[in-house]
Amino acid sequence: STGNEVTKPESYDVEYLTPVSIGTPGQVLHLDIDTGSSDLWVFSSETPSNLVNGQSLYEPAKSSTAQKLEGYTWKISYGDGSSSSGVVYRDSVTLGGLTVSSQAVEAATQVSEEFTSDSNNDGLLGLGFGSLNTVQPKGQKTWFENIMQELDSPIFTADLKAGEPGTYNFGYIDKNAHIGNISYVSVNDSNGYWTWTSPGYAIGTGALVSTQIMGIADTGTTLLLLPSTIVVMYYAQIPGALYDATQGAYTLPCSPTPPDFSFAVGDDGQVITIPGEYILYAAITSIGTMCFGGIQADSGIGFSIFGDVALKAAFVVFDGGKKRLGWASK
Ligand SMILES: O=C(CCCl)NNC1=[NH+]CCN1
Image 1 (cartoon, rainbow, N blue to C red):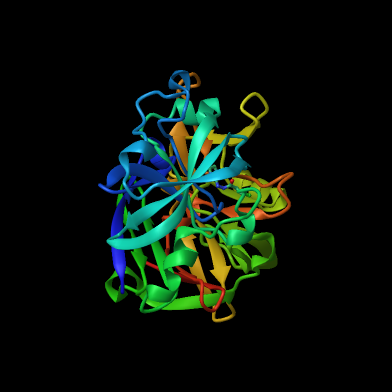
Image 2 (cartoon, rainbow, N blue to C red; image 1 turned 60 degrees about the vertical axis):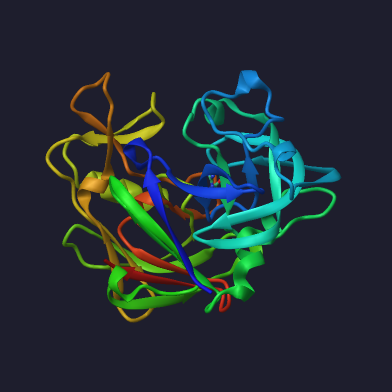
């Protein structure tokens, strides 16, 4: 089988939300598909009402196929400091027309302020590796791990776009969605993430700098987080760019368009080029002409994060069968 679903950007492409049907009859929630985590959790009838602010709720009591996993709990925190926790059900979950009849659905009984204030986001659907799942006393498989053997090919692809809807495909590669070859690189899943190593980068029209950048392909992180040395080099090319200690981030003039940023993939010379305009992430209203940089330092994380700023410049194959990533331009 194969499937596909449209995913829509929230403002500033901060995240992409995808409709997912849970339970019988189906309750449609809009979830953040997140290759940087491995829990499927949702706002629910068990989420205290003071923590709910417009989100749609999963109501297990209204689903004839919901089963409570008595004594099971979960608790997760993300790279941006947000967090949530709760209890666990098993229920039917359909994404892109593909149904897992017995998926662990984690109902939130606690969510942090970042989630409460994000009214359109009804929860997350993790597509990282199951080893990262936080359910106790027994870790649960992701939706993709559960559907994988039904798929024509054990893969899914992410085709995120700047300021417009993109697509997640399951089980097949849409040749019309990418330009030129797909370059594959091996993934080390030992930390549960889609971890890979880029062999280098280029700034603007400059020559490729050969250096290994180890990072994760993470649809759930908004920006591109790279080693500080590379980030300093990039912003040094931009008059007026500066590290704003108040924001704890690099900022740059919103005009003119800054240089493109390219990263290499594989040993066949393939590069993915991020248009400079993607690096003008958002205007910092209080300062007026200054913008928040779409490239920031990965300091303190231990690896880089190829988040949406990078992913929306590429067609990306997440190959669960061969544990590899495929990157192509589009
Ligand atoms: O937590 C991370 C980074 C892992 Cl190193 N990505 N996924 C995510 N989901 C919500 C915010 N960020």
